[in-house]
Image (cartoon, rainbow, N blue to C red; front, side):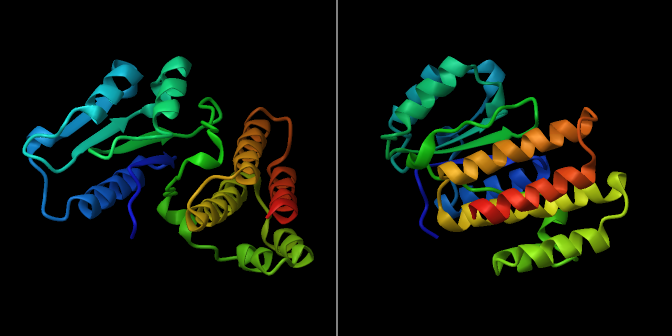
Length: 220
């Protein structure tokens, strides 16, 4: 695994994101790390200036500085923009991992193709018992909609299940590509809008899932 200088973990399941952060830390520091070279920050209590200062400070006794930014979604827009600008040319002396909780209330950061992302979704999302993502991968939209017609019977049960599967599928593709391109960013944003529409009663869950499948088939 070729590590990047930083990772932004977009998540809905905190436990899964914590496991991925620990996995990245272990990969970056296979022999362990001293407490002097490890810092944990929280988005609501820090600034881009503080994060950049830590990234650029030479680590104790050589090596690299590990910086974990929790609740990155709490950073203000100006701080987020400043941090993304810095990350175009990040310091080689730091390894930065940012945890960003996604929800309809938290807007995705869309910095374009210049950044690399690592996604970890909910553990349950990794299983597609219906096979809808397999037929989408083969470009068979008709078959995907047939599966939806046959398997989707209850909004309360099947809307979160189907959307979880489709979101996991999109995240997996982004992870495989190693970056978030404009098409995938648009899809993530559209998924958030569909989820909000269902929660506010503007659409049925069945309609939202069908639209999500159509968007995936059209853009991927």
